[in-house]
Image (cartoon, rainbow, N blue to C red; front, side, top):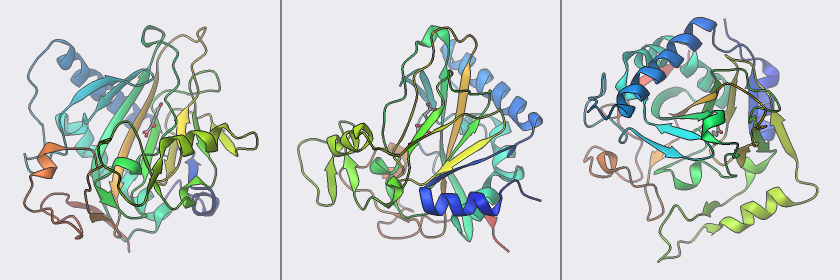
Length: 283
Ligand SMILES: O=C(O)CCC(=O)C(=O)O
């Protein structure tokens, strides 16, 4: 059984994003939310937190928080066993395979986006995820799971339909400015695309348990929160590696120290099993 429909698969191919309704049951949503709260509370208390299930060679980066249109809690998954259970035993990896066509699927990274009255009303700015990835490939989707209901007023996700077909990555302030790499275009090009009068922007209200999955080149953001909305809005994003992905960091890639120094990762090659274990194989 799967929650993915033929319409989802077609929509992902044509538009670059699709919403799978009821992808995860309330049990998973409660367990994931509680795990996020537990790790975040430890961080808030200034405790040193050890990874709960990855080794040092696997851990893709350090747990941290940033203000990014709310709070972004990055790389929480290695720090709680519930995430391992979800990655291995929920249908998440199977969904990635069904939607992207990847024959094998591995997990690599996560970010949790929490917006609440106390974190302000800011939108998540327009961006693409893939523009700073150290991986290249088509099958590198982001899976954004609503852990709360996210209606039109509560910072829903927005995407620029068809932008996954844009051939270049975008160079942003997040990457080095002192060199110019071929194949990248200025961030302003992305901003102009979404500001155009006829920009095909789609808004994705979601219920807790729905999954928005989108291509790494998809231009996306969230809407701003209506200041009158109470309660939290939580989007749990996980990033996945499919069969066509290769490890190929360039000078604009996000510097993830534990990966950059990992001798098992070789430029131009598929990331090896010892670093990112397979969690799903089709058929
Ligand atoms: O939930 C959000 O506001 C932003 C999510 C996002 O941009 C991402 O996961 O790449």
